[in-house]
Image (tube, rainbow, N blue to C red; front, side, top):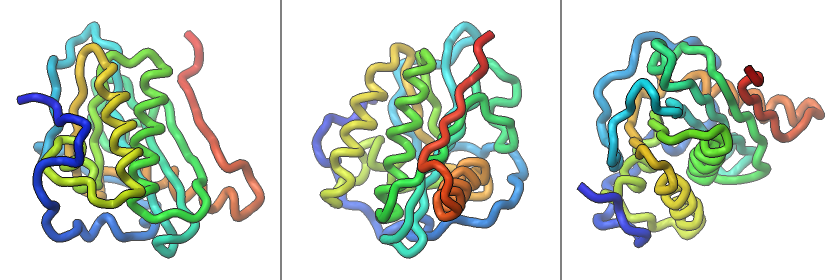
Length: 207
């Protein structure tokens, strides 16, 4: 199977996923490991032990939709044995306040910024585990991108993913497995409301 072209997808979306219209969730710990992906994007190569890459979990939220919005992401090295554990401590993270946005714009912004951070850290491969079925299906080319606000973010995400020499995947996971990224969203909004910085990005310590 080939990656989707940079068009507007192939099929109409079904009814919206209820997870795509929500405020930040509770800061609860995640339990259990990832299950089989419900939808996957294209991948030209499988990960190997020598591959530099990351598991990427992202989230976006808006308190009001539109309302005060944020983007959160955690990146975990593929070399780690616990890389796919939802509770794994991240090697890098993003917690960004976005101003007033819709939830879907926040979700896509989180994906774009996480991909960018992965590339900055030298990733050859990224495996996205997202609780936004909308984004997973649109990146795979299964659903059309009808929202004009999302089209440039969708195109930017695909263009960046295509630069990865060892490929990428995008899979839908339950929201309960994405609480670390969700916490980054909560932290961003709460931090800014308290007078703190709009963006906090953590990178691995130099070895």
